[in-house]
Image (cartoon, rainbow, N blue to C red):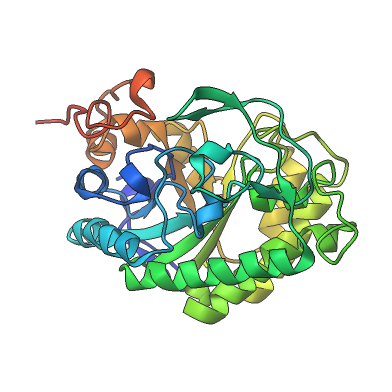
Length: 353
């Protein structure tokens, strides 16, 4: 039997298999509210041992993209309950990914009167889709004050508490892909001179304080974090201290005792960086990006990854676990419907009979 499909237990994490559904923005949350269509989508994919939801805003000013869900209102909590109840029926655990897009966004995607915020007042190159005006350049962010950063941390903690109220088994902090946490980590974007800037320790402080505060509020075994070392998504530029930064984060997160670190692999990932993370972090490590069922099985046996995550393979194959079990071919993703608003390319992918 494939190791992927065998049960997994480590620390406080106990799953029916080693298969993880990776977080993917799908833009079906009309008015930023989770809904019945989303519940159907996640329920279809509950062959995974662990589902990590699409990025979900902990506060209104975090809604950089059109039609992404939030977890800051009672209506959103109630909407998410449909999802968690549906997923739990199949014995699957589900973590809510918390995303603050920071400078990646446009003011038209935010509620009236709010502005984009970021580590520094440095506008990101590139464009983003808005429902009002189509593709637009990213808006210029307002640099968060020191008190503003602390307010962001408080909103995240409240959002994590809301997630538990909604029935989630835990939360994942999105510290990857050029969003707010990674904007703080990168010295080309974080030009701050306060306690949240400067040194590696200063730039990593937001991530560490979020993990520590949320662990205290809901339990360390209910906290994960996703990183993408060396990624240039979100107009991030390379810097020299990447390995030292993630080794430091691994040590600090291990001391807090979070459930897992989720690594999005990229082409520029040196083995030495992976070795440093694995050496300093004793909890669960999830490997993601570019895996096939075969390469995922190899990854599980190579010593770095404890769990393996699939994104678009799970998007196009709701029954991915069953296809892995019998060696069936995988459906291809419909890239034209990734971020549209209806069921097409969302809940209508064929499954094995």
